[in-house]
Image (cartoon, rainbow, N blue to C red; front, side, top):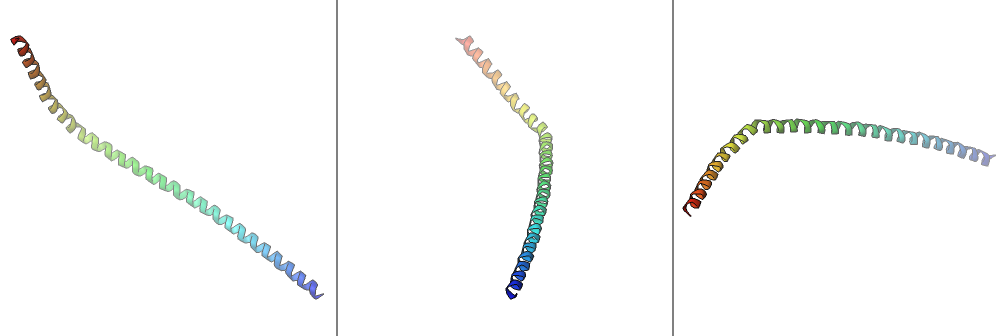
Length: 101
């Protein structure tokens, strides 16, 4: 009778342990799922913030280039003029050299 009572108590303890194990396992899986959802939400937020920063940065770069482009083009025109005059001088001196021969 005493052995039967011990076996019965042991079975109850095993059943209680199984129930605790199932509760803990369920809770762990719920926490893992929650973590995955939060991680995905955070990752999406980080990526969207990064994309927005990239858009803003590229807009600033584009504006800077638009603002400076006329200045650069003016410099390019100024630099071309002496080259054109230099080419004319070289052509004239070549022609004169050919005429003298």
